[in-house]
Length: 282
Image (cartoon, rainbow, N blue to C red):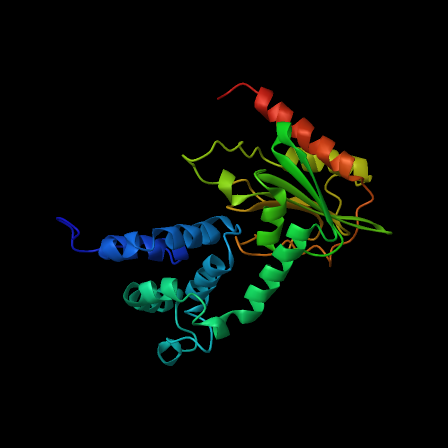
């Protein structure tokens, strides 16, 4: 089945990795479930909405090695190293993925609350409840204004095809912001052309001046950004808690409000991107 090869390896644990290994080991079973596998892989790798079943498969894989109700619970010891947990996860998945794909809700107890949270968010976004979206196609940017925090999948759904997203939560005190280069621009995709992700430090400099902040001043809220090398690269106003993971929600509810208007933030992004694109290649 594997030709001259007798082993399959993956250097990390995730849904598309498990599905790929399963497809190599069990090609006939995989081809019969190709649509469900592709939907689950895209959900996991890109944090996008491909339906409730695909989300259920993704959550089952990712909760398998940690949730108390997991079929692996008796083998998961406290303090077990990630590589040990993930090895157990792959062992179980390669034997049981066909069943998970055929009945994706079988392990609902592992993830029911999170699944419901995302599905509810998606339904509100599809209904246009409490949210407005304005696309800037020339910038590959979507401005998503919301009256509530949103999930990562919900934000990407609202943004459509735009790989650059600015989430805004307005309030009487000002605006809470979270900008994201979506993970699609971290990959080299063959299915679509995605705009590059220039460094965000020049944007911070413009925003700090507009905010009236002194460069390098210690204490108090400030504009911050991640490295473009991060799979999900973010920028916001307040205090950075740490690098964002792919499925982290862009929760800005605890951030201080900025006094800047969304148009000012978008202008700073556009100017920095324009300067980066105009710079000679090295």
